[in-house]
Picture 1 (cartoon, helix red, strand yellow):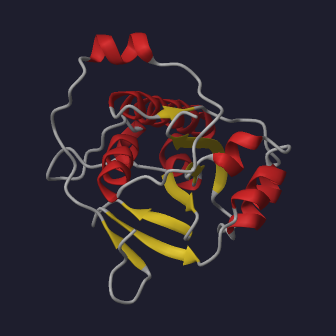
Picture 2 (spheres, rainbow, N blue to C red):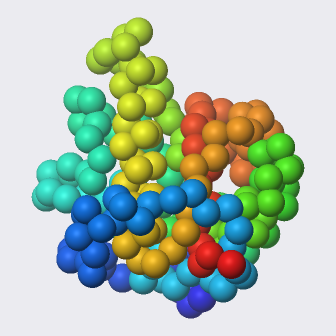
Length: 199
């Protein structure tokens, strides 16, 4: 995978706006895949997946997943062999935050699930609840979790349309995931979604 000169940023190509499968075909083909080959994802595939999960769709910043009050409480991380990256929505690129392969450690935090350590990429959806609670108070947790579900489904369907496999994982130790990935204390992990080529 090509990195920029300093190695801390992965510049992503512009995502495609038209795919090869219809929405109906994609829905029909969606299934949970838990066994992956070691073939890495390309920058084009990463770009498309990240755009599907939280990419912008309007000049003012609207995103692919609906967000209560357009407050955008979700943060996206990607765990790759090359390290852990944070998705910069505004610039559509990945910023490296850790320079080591932590998929085995992440798998241990996810109760030893093999799909986490096998997949070439594990997408992590984290929530910053206070962005939504400022406006919606005790409804915030509900709205944020609804948004995470929308974003996760976008990723799962985009994976299918690219010929990739994916599976949503909710069984993990929250604090262990946060520690393994060095997430900020207010970034609450909600979803782990390994993505790759089906074995």
